[in-house]
Length: 84
Image (cartoon, rainbow, N blue to C red; front, top):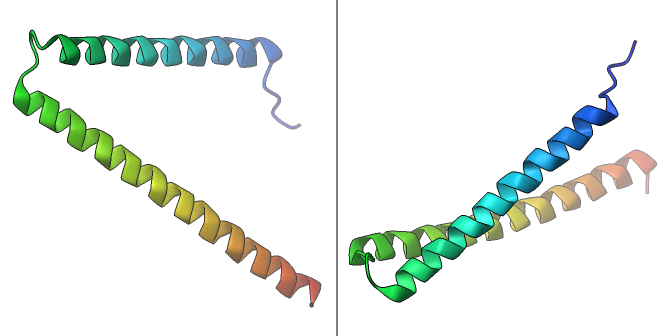
């Protein structure tokens, strides 16, 4: 018997994901306002945040490269299976 996920569980998962995304967006907005205001912005924290953003950007680029490489390998395997 195959395992089937109930539709109510999928709906609950979508709602929970939406809540987490909303929290992440609102949290990052507060962080930007805090940095612009300059009230509690410690220069070391600002530098660490900028470094983190740079690393996240580099990771995103690496993920794109890995995806591209995986697609090329899959295409080559498919061509080998088809005998072309």
